[in-house]
Image (tube, rainbow, N blue to C red; front, top):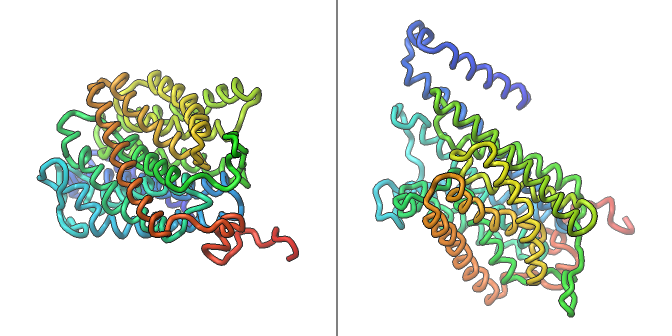
Length: 435
C-alpha cells in the first residue's frame, strides 16, 4: 500500500473520529478521553513521520549544493545522523531532555524510554509517540552540521560529533526549555526550536567550519573568493520543497495536543504562519540577491525559504499572519547578508548552514520578544546561551580531533573526492572519464 493511500486512510479516520463526538463514544463505549487519545496520538505520529522525512530534504539540499564527488559521503552522513542519533537519543538523550524533577541545568530520568500502558488525561500523546516525534528533532539538529563541513571532514570524526550532539549536547539544551529547566523558569519561549534545534545545529556547524578551514580553492591568497557551485541545483531545490513539507510536521506538530477547539485553531494558525514566513523569506532573499548581483539567484532564494522557516519556528504559536510575513521578510535578506559575511571572513560553509540555522535561529528567538509578547531580555539571553553552548562545546571537540589528526582528510583525498577517499565508491560512475 502506498504512503499516499495510507495518509488518505489516516486523514479519513481522524475526520470520522472528530465528527462522531460524544454519540460515537456512547454507542461504542469509548470515553471522550479515549477518543482524544486516539486523535492526538495518530496526529502526532503523522507529524513525526513528516519531520523524519526532512532527513531526505537535508540530504538532497546538502548533496545538491556540493560537488558530485562528495555525494555518497554526504548521503552517508545523513543516514548515520538518524541511525546513531535515534539509538543514542533512546538510550540516554530522552532521559536527559525530560528528566522530571531536576535542578534546572542537568538531570537524568533513566536509560531508555519506559513503556506507557495507560492513558494520561493530562497529556494524551503516549510516551512512545512523544519519543518518535522528539527523536526526529534530534536528528534534525545533528544533520544541519553536515552541510557546513562538507567536502573535507573525515567520516569517523563526523560520527563522533553526531553521537555527542544527539546523545548529550542537544538533550541538555532541550531540557533547559522543554524539560522545564532554568530558561523555562525565566519565561523563555522557543515554540518548536529556532534556538534549541536550529541555532544549536547552526553554531555547531560554524565551529566545525572554522576549525576545519575552507575547502581547497575556495579563497585566493589575496582574500578574494572563488565560487564553488553545487553539482545539482535540481536536487537542492527538491530538497527545499521536501523540507517545506516536513516543516508542517515540525511546527504544527509542536502544538502537541490537537483535540478541542482551541488546539485545532492553534494548529492551523501555526501551519499558515509557517507557510507565510517561508514564502516571504524566499521572495525577499530573491529581491536582495537581485539588488546585490543584478540578477535573481536561485540558491539565495532557496536558502531564503529555509531562513523564513527557521525564523518563524520559535514563535509560530504567538504571532499573527501579518507578523509571520514580517519575520520571514526579515529572515530572507538576513540569510543573504550572513552568507556574504562568512565569505568576507573567509569561513567556508558550502550550503549556508550557519546563515540559515544559526543567524536566522537567533532572529527567531529575538522576533519572539518583539512580536510574540515574550520578555525581550530573556529571549536575547536564551539566544546567546544556546549559540554559545553549541559553539563552545563543538569548537573544543573539533579542536581535539584536529590535534589527534582525525579531523580533515588529506589534500589528495579532498581533491579526488570523499566518495573515493572515505568510502571507496563513486556516486556517478557513468561520468568517470575513461569508463
